[in-house]
Image (cartoon, rainbow, N blue to C red; front, side, top):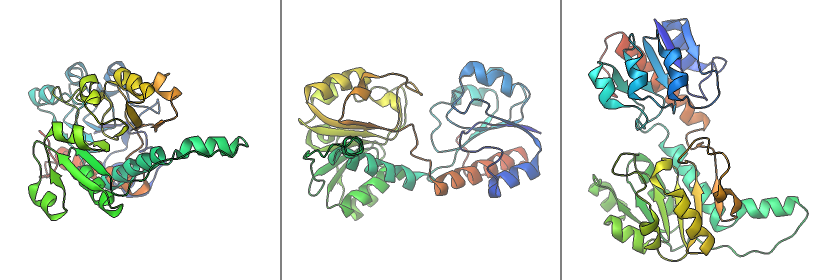
Length: 316
């Protein structure tokens, strides 16, 4: 069987349990030649005669799926499936799997890294000190502040627990909220509007769906308290970046930490001109522990489906 492997952190020279398991299953492997998530036009020729596909953050559109006549399984290296056309896959009888929860700690850690970097202006002060300057620049503390979580899944829960360690006050909105978890950890369950209006920091942990695209738009950001900091380690399409730039520049927003962008890689962006914006290249899941977990899970899911075994991580 032929398998396409596209995650940028799962390469043929990686070694380890997952790669050994995959190579013992089949030696007919094709790897991502670009080092970045693949577009529709890049995917189609690579998938033309593949039976299986371990997918990174590629754009798996209906056109891609319709041009993969032998494909039986799309095994996501990660939890999100928003870049896979699930309806098209279902119509073609292609099983889609994911690896839920395995990168939650890594993404929650990066969320706090971005939050602290903005609060204490770490990138700015690092740059100035290395340039020979010795600046004095006041930041702000996390202690006692309210953090609003839009989404209380595995990552949101991890961020909430970390926030409690900083003596912050977490509040959360989620259409399918785990009330038992919220009650056990002292997390206030709130409406979307209440989170937007009351939180000092807002952290996004929502999937990218039609109803969540640009959910943080100009109107929503203007409803936030002056100085609010927004962190997005989820999906780039959740935020209207143009509106965010204007509100950051005016001082209405206090800062923004982005690990995800509307376009990836984003190319030049006016956001990058601002010292109160800290960015990373969609690296939330890139820890040794998380990449090993995603590799192990995605390979196991793929082999289970291709050999007819039951698997608990089938999305559709």
